[in-house]
Length: 89
Image 1 (cartoon, rainbow, N blue to C red):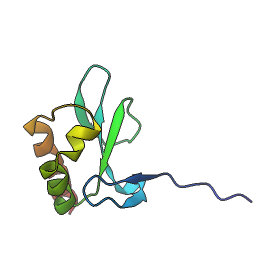
Image 2 (image 1 turned 30 degrees about the vertical axis):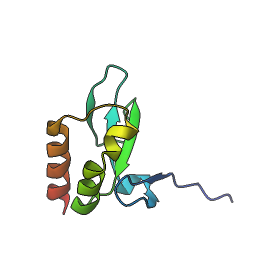
Image 3 (image 1 turned 180 degrees about the horizontal axis):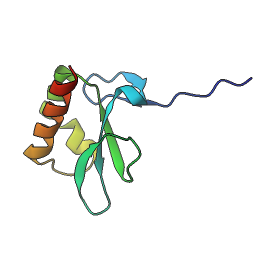
Image 4 (image 1 turned 120 degrees about the vertical axis):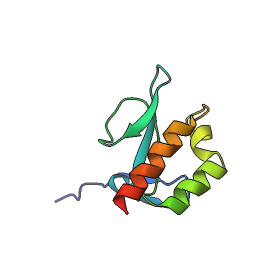
């Protein structure tokens, strides 16, 4: 029997490929909305980040999330990411 392939994504903080379900997804829709995608299924361009504060701060400092989504990220989005990570730790 063929093993089902587990989707992996690259964390923008640490550059490590991990199981997609372990990462937090930030989505930019065609309308330009940016939000956290808890389901992992929302339409739009996704950027992934590990569920830890170090990776998040590194990705913010190097502007990798903004570059990946080709847009400026409002501070509120970064705050909601920080809160999501703090809640899970």
